[in-house]
Length: 388
Ligand code: NDP
Ligand code: MG
View 1 (cartoon, rainbow, N blue to C red):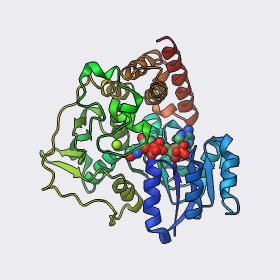
View 2: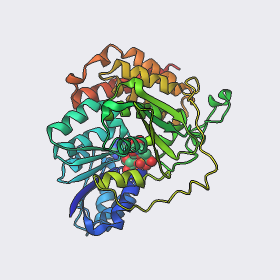
View 3: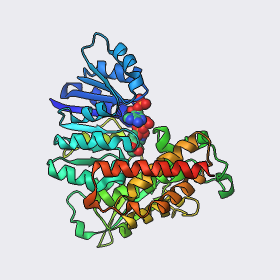
View 4: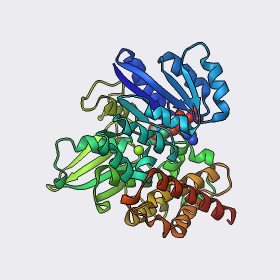
């Protein structure tokens, strides 16, 4: 039986992963599940899947978790060290689906055990792509993309020679506000930003879709995953979210990956890789789709895309700064302390103020150096927001 762990099991990606695991329960031995606040779900899934260990990120909820697991024989633990321990438990395949930079350390630990890491947590690649890849190489572990666009590119590259690849195009739905007039955006509320036209995802990534910070992270993730020059990466607004990415070759061909907006496709692809297996996703009826449309993204409406280019140019630890500043700006937007368009202003200002420190090179990158930069950027973002 294949040993699997799910980090961020109670979230949107985690629950979709569990759905696939439950459908083929005889094939998997579930080692560890982690969550944060949703103790009821965590305990229920740990019991259903006969996990060895359940971890909550919140130490204050350890007693609740212990109570919920009483009599099951499942170990309960809490806190950031316990999350890292969950990653370190012997598993063959680990889903990395914690939201935010908190997902980095447990994922690295899984790679150190030689596990295949199915990476939904794009923040790991943005903050510490060089470190993630070096750790995987050192321990002969694999990182498999789960973000739908990156899974699509990965699939489009199977059997291809990277030398022939001239373009990588990732699509964006445009999020909740894609058709809003510019002048209305400053007044957009968190509740309005947290609705997505096509995908059903966690709240934070849904708001990041409306601001295009999600796409900005994904551009950087593309660069890290496929080790391509930033100049070949393009973003295309595609409101129907049917084509997830396209790979362009030197003979003019564009290979598009088309699929329903259901994350179980990308999760299942990473779960069964290198095989392709039947998955419980909708079969698209292209004849019934009246049209697929595309347009170029507007960098005034979505300044995050411009910032992503600056981050790739700066390199080093600027990805960690960018992500941490974005996470704090998002916290403050959700708390209604800053407006929707102010998120990008905060992130840009943090990048400027920390540009000297973030110059540490990839070769100097360690988990500590990344976490230190993450901490500095959060503090800097808080100071800027306090002065707004
Ligand atoms: P959710 O918010 O739905 O779930 C996040 C998970 O992380 C939950 O299990 C949550 O626990 C846990 N969590 C929250 N905060 C912490 C913390 N500080 N430490 C440890 N665990 C924590 O997010 P999604 O599932 O939407 O996204 C997960 C990751 O996957 C993100 O990196 C996202 O960008 C990426 N992704 C998501 C997609 C999607 O379709 N949802 C698509 C592509 C990528 P609890 O709920 O118990 O509090
Ligand atoms: Mg995506």
